Length: 214
Image (cartoon, rainbow, N blue to C red):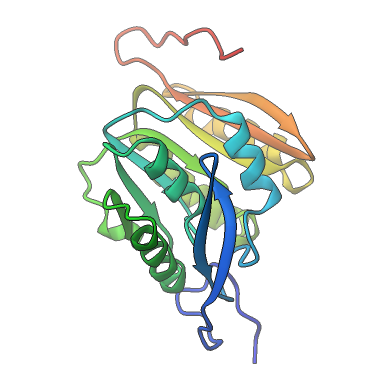
């Protein structure tokens, strides 16, 4: 039997739920995880770099975790911005199930864990945080970013973490070449072999870019 991939819609292995103790949004939490999803053993190094590099999320509006896995980013957004609506999307049904279970365990009612096609087309995002699935392949990755990055509100940011040795710099160049008229991309942080890319939607009127975060 072929091994499970975290980007499989339906992992072939039996779902065995097990406890997961970790820290999100500065607080210890007791969650659940299972095989067949991304980083089932806990918060991976790239996601930790992302969460330690981004500014606080907007307090309200629609926020997006693109490729949610068991929910580390989505739960962090929901804990930090309880009045916001957090969309946690993934093609992996098991990942969505685990994110819903973990939101319930934390008493979070502002997390919508859904398939990408279940996000209403009119929704625009105050921020996107993502550890995107680089290993899904370049065409699939580019198609995903083509779909979601343009849905960032004008003057708002998407934050992506990508391993340097898995093409972070080439991805930055691709975003600039593909979306330069609408989106401004820059390297916001480098840590532990990862790049954090900040992708800002240009203002509709001027196209000006605010001063980068220090």
